[in-house]
Amino acid sequence: MANETLRSVSKRLGITTVDVLRKAAELERLMDVRDCSMTLTSMAKSVICLEIAGNSSQVPVDKNVAIRHSGMTKKAYIHAFKTIECLLGKQKEFTIKDLAVQFGCMEASNLAQRIHQRYKQDFVQEVEDISHPIFVATALYTACRYQKIKMDKTKLLNMLATKRSTFDSLHKKMEKIPGILESAEGNKRSTKRGYGLLEKVNEIIEGQSHSTKQPKNDEEETNAEDREYEEWKKRILESAAKAMQSAGKTNKETSNS
Image (cartoon, rainbow, N blue to C red; front, side, top):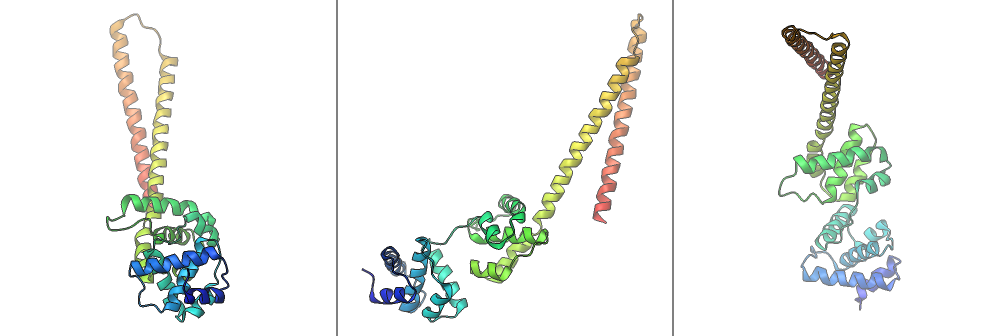
């Protein structure tokens, strides 16, 4: 049975569902077992457990009402709520798409996915827990900044209940990634274009060769012509390759200037 404080607080929060009350009571017991009360008052503890239980049961709790009855400041309550949620393993998981919908920046979601994936691939340290929501949120924020899309940073930080310095440090690492991705895409396109041009030059040369070559009776003369043709073809292809390298270098210098 739920204790009297829990029952009293649930009425003030407008929670009448028995299932939510039962879950909140279980969370309070779990907090005691794991010794994660964080020197909270019994009232604050009950409010937080009821909000967590309500969220898991799709029963919304007014955050402002919860903060008022907890006897805590907004900043202290949000920090305590997120900490306990994490300690109890009840933190809400969300995807980049979920966040993008919530913040109205769906056009940044594709780049955010690529930033998140590249960070996991190249930057993650062994001590980092990449499943933490801050990595998903920072990837989306970084994509929005890169694409000049407005995103409410203060609202995002409140949702994460994380320090601004921690968020900014992670963002500083991630903000390098869009440039890396863009550079890789540019090199890939350049290589593909270069390969196609050389193939085309080779096809033209072969076509001209077949159309102009005449059958020869003298085998030695034919062999000499073949050698001359191969040398000529090699020079043409080398010239084409050098021209492409020069053009690629010029384009790179132009983009960097």
